[in-house]
Length: 379
Length: 245
Image 1: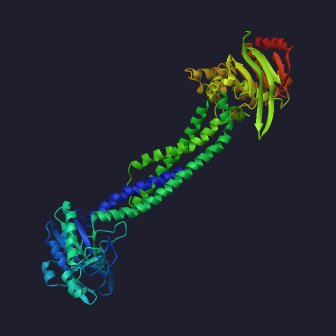
Image 2 (image 1 turned 120 degrees about the vertical axis):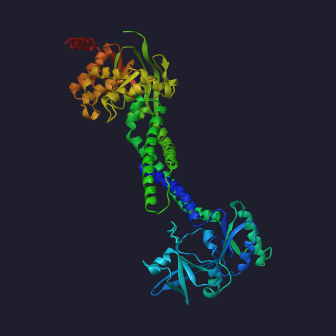
Image 3 (image 1 turned 180 degrees about the vertical axis):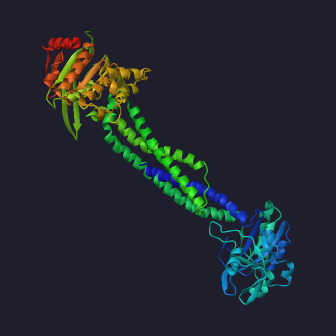
């Protein structure tokens, strides 16, 4: 009978642990992605966050970049092109995200180059065919070998590997930030992608407090440059740390809601089972009730006794559930399955909830036991 | 023996309703019992003995009529006061013992003290004394399952006496015992009565009823005879002899 309460409390404990873990992991992840509170990105095409509605929007250009750069309060502006392409080293090949970016990418992302160097303005001006590899394609193409100075082929174009990015590692959602290759924007425009429109622009403002203001300015600039009438929707979208945070939180909330449902149902079922077991036990213990009544127990004494027992049983289930929840949360954390952070709150919550279940579902059987007439119970 | 009346029952009726069918179990029963008396109520099964006992024991209330117990009108009392009276003034002894299973003799005897208005400070001592009185001080840690029938019934007597009640109500106290153990138990009741306690024994065993000073016969919910037991003095003499021996 304690099983229901146990499951309920266990899932409750896990929910809170996951919730807490998610929050801290999300903050961590955003910091990891180089998204300081003072930066944001503006993507080409309407939509929301990473889910663009129109992938064929070609309105974002270098003109937009120049105009944003000229705005007050803007520190760094990085234009970006992006495409998934196959990159080849002799017989080895892999598909990765190729970014055409300006050299400011590195200070904006604050992503270290561990070997070799990042391309510079001269590489940009000369549209040189150089590439900085993330860890994933570097490992896939070269294995244990040193990729620096080697040539890789993308489409019909050969690039020289001049740098390797620091390894970030998989995020818990399965996104691999190391799966990328960076080339100068000018090279990507004229030699590889052969297009002039941009995929996105990353903007780092002087200060986190002016971000909102800067975003409004960017909106005006882009709408004007793209010739949008006042009634038309934006043909671009912002990706901000808050936006990502909100998105991640929302998706994690769906999971939490499910677990909450499970725990509520389990607690309810546990409570009903406790109630029924108590009702059966009243029948079994009718003699005992009778004897106690004969020797002076009042109705309230019997009520108290049964209520005490149901609370005790429920608390026992709660304690076992809290223990199970703790084990599960620790396991989730240990195996990196879901982020979990163990705090004291769920255990206090577990205590309160199991006590409540015991009281709510114990009151009916307890009253029933107390209202039995003593002469009937003794026969 | 004082002559004050401890129980005065005046023409009480008890009617049970079951699925619309009314059954008159007691029809105008009147009894008055003096303090320190020794009464047995006999009658065939279905005569209303047990119902009368539950009413006398304040486990149930009469449908009509008045019942004065030690000056209090029981019919007008609520659960709280009825519980108090059962706790303080009445000691029950049952045919089926009604000891809590799995609970030691000591704890079983303790039950009435748990529900006292104020659990006495010397509760442990009192329980030990009560068990010693029935000769079970060496078995107080035993559960009912580990005791013989006679021993169990002696535990129930200890339990009924723990709060020093004025009345001991016994319902077929020897019904589940062999004749030797039964005689011992009745002997214990004789002693209690000799100390001045009011004893009411409900039975259908003539040997048991012979221990009482007064024998009431119940039939079909009515008292059909109320006579003084001629042999009472003789059994008292026997008791005195037994005590001396």
